[in-house]
Image (cartoon, rainbow, N blue to C red; front, side, top):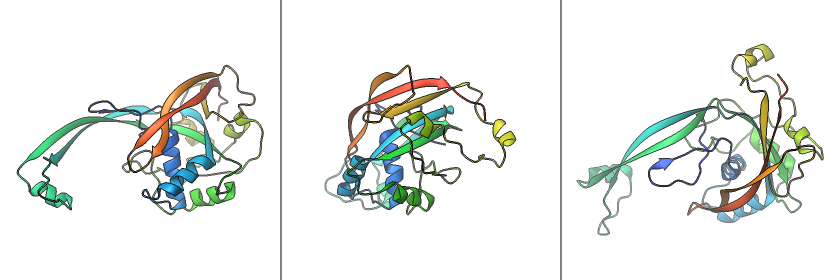
Length: 233
């Protein structure tokens, strides 16, 4: 299960088809042990990493009808716990729908910048032995299996994203039972990364560049994409 947050209007909380930059930065930050309130560390991490994604499957869309009760604002009292909130008489019910992606499969390439505080080996070790629990967009979406980061050196982005991994379920035959049947894979990468052999490139503006973690502020960035024939496992 995953939920890749997109700009939300009203009560709808949509999910992107692929991991957003903010979600990937948050995942690496959790692995490194960076707390949410350590804004200076988040700023350094943001300046240190670039991401590219190979989407093998966007998964199946699941929509959750969500209800929550929140008290009316009262400046005369301080509610310190959820238990204190529910004791009040003035509770308001907030309705929303939240989208998730089920059984998605993505390969992510991480590139460190020249002025990065962390080297790629440190990132790999953190993903193998994370300090905090890793989840895919929401805390209700922990990873279904451990990550399997590999180190590679190449000038071609597609080569990095097409790297071979061990079968997820123990054998190639077992993987074929649930891996997507699509014959094409989608590639996404951010501005500043060299696309290499990828062709048929298009560019779009996406709003997932974090500005401030505490205030949940984001800005736009340019993302490039391409679609290529996928080799069968």
